[in-house]
Image (cartoon, rainbow, N blue to C red):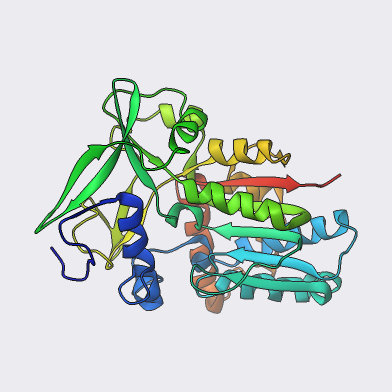
Length: 333
């Protein structure tokens, strides 16, 4: 077992293990951005592929700027800002195409260990692959009841089942899963609920736009998920063992959009239907943006890389079909 783990002869929740592996200031996976993102890293996101997503988001933001009666400041809060690529491309697009919005915009990048949410928010809170990286509890159904999966830390890491560590877990399970299957494992993302509740306390009015891998209740049941949705990535490869190299690989769990929507419902928000990223891009003017790309020179060799990246973003069955988009409206009359 790697020596970086701070526990010996202890039993801990998977959430605590995942939090350490991803966010420990010294050993956490996300503390090394060069290792994480891009060609030398372990994965790409849509914003690394082509700026078309940022350009689309800029139009969404400009639209809601008018709905919110052009507030000043107009908060643009990015959860999980990472390298800042999305924020950079978004602000550049606003400055070019929506200068009146840009003049009033207050961009607030948030990371787990950096940035601070404004006390009062009026504007847009957005994220791209943020919620799937929040640490989760893992449970297994035994006799129609959820049992928590703990980690026993000795010379090796082993899994043991025990009583639930948090009283909120049963309610999450009821809201998130239509059927509890005997012996199946499930992820419970209580931190996602906490983030949404915190945003509700701070937001005067605006929208929360979430882009992530995930599912609703119906789509979850369409696949065999006996071991849940937990996934690990290292050097652009899927890794099956979450305990293999703590701190040196990404650990994610698909977002339960059904819980996200029901949390918003309880807070009094309204939610648009869950759609794919492709549908989101089409709804907000993808054809127009493709026309702009042609105007920049369809046969210009200097634009070849941009066109290939755009193609990879839009290829059927690719990232834009697997990523989901949820738009929630907070106190918008």
